Length: 124
View: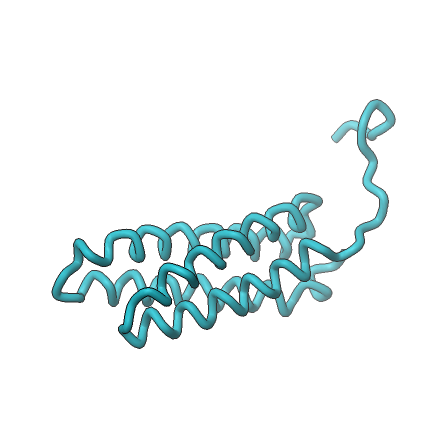
């Protein structure tokens, strides 16, 4: 599958990574930073996996769909965490993370061409 076919998911992942970076940075500026520790941590994880998924799709990696499945789970966890907070940056991050989770689930569920596996697979 070409990276053009994955463009909407790549864009959603990049948008989510940016939103997570902004949210984590904004959480660090809150009065009770300790109360935001899990939010900051999951924002960092979500941004990292979103960037990895976007890069994998852009390369046309055979593992892109599997990575998108994991990314969807992490984005969903990020949204759940961010929704627990009342700050606008958390609410916005939750909205964008949910959109990314949806795009990644669609990507993970796309049918693929048969992959060569097992003993008959060509060596790289």
